[in-house]
Image 1 (spheres, one colour):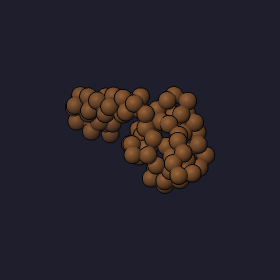
Image 2 (image 1 turned 45 degrees about the vertical axis):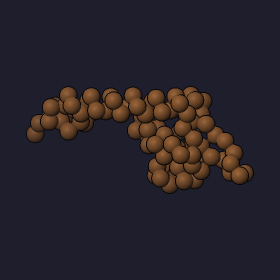
Image 3 (image 1 turned 135 degrees about the vertical axis):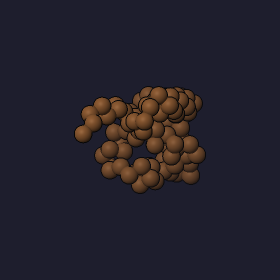
Image 4 (image 1 turned 120 degrees about the horizontal axis):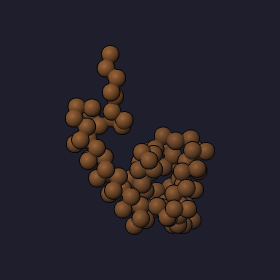
Length: 93
């Protein structure tokens, strides 16, 4: 989920595939797997601008980002000293 969130943030203004790969710190194979999944689920669109493949977040992708941010914020406020780790570390040494 975190990787998809990162890709969606990167793709807000439209971006080339190689730029996503470098900014999200992904291998080419990883990037292709995530892009395929996200395209199939309508989180991003692929379009051609001046002969280049550009990836842009969709309305559904923006909705995903908003809900992810809300859940992250909710979990952090309820973590009570666990610094928002999921799952909280219940093992104290």
